[in-house]
Image 1 (tube, rainbow, N blue to C red):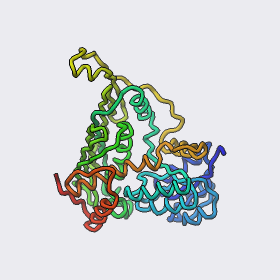
Image 2 (cartoon, helix red, strand yellow):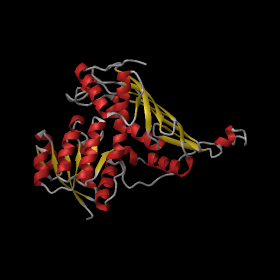
Image 3 (tube, rainbow, N blue to C red):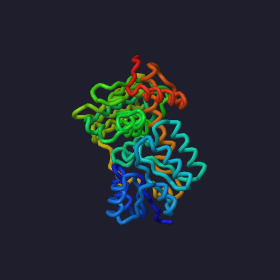
Image 4 (cartoon, helix red, strand yellow):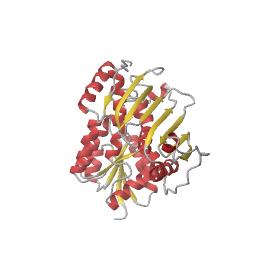
Length: 366
């Protein structure tokens, strides 16, 4: 096999990008699309000369598909994902993998049971800057000591009014955390190379007429006892993106899309006064050649993972970590105390159910 037969479920939003990417890739044969909005399905189907369906269930029954992208509202990720996997079809899930870590576990278990690939679309993994820094870190920068992540953006009320599910606990399952920040949470912990074991946070809604948070701040204790600080909002105009990670043999910084690094292989000896501090200069990371970036790169890798029978770039297990962090930040903010990871999924389900009843951000404070 050098090409896979592909379908896309949900083509009204980001699904259009999945369709376009699939159509352009040499290792994918785009067969079909589905959307509950017949107008969307028909328009995209005719534009790309593929079959189209209102009901994705009819599509996966009638078409011989190797894989699909699922690009539907968050609250449908788990149910549609489980259904597609039960038909022995590989799934690339648009982020987040699911709304809750418990749902993510069910998807991961189902994929193992049916021996199919489960991937999550975090397209910043194939940004050349991020790929270059990851290689540098693994090659020469050592263990993380601390990390800072600030990601803020701007979303107006019209954005949240674009769909009934947006800005709600029942539909979106969160606000800035699950929709925008999750991309950078994924990159942050990928570069850190260590999982969090405890998170303490505060969340709130400052300016938007929505149920969910538009600001969140958190401190994470990592498995090697290093520390990470995160802050997010969706009311900053202009927004900022800043990432700073210090390792025992160097450091990396990203300001917006500009990355720098420095190597400090004698840091411990410097602190112990065994050697003098050397003169250091921040450097630009070497360029990394990536065939395809963005969503196109994620689909290309996922298709090759099926063809080559290997793990996709972001497997279900890796995609689960970011939603676990998001769930932990929301849960800690709700309870007003640190929470341990791996997260107790049943306890988070209880917190989310309470938030859905209240239809507001509940912030108990520190």
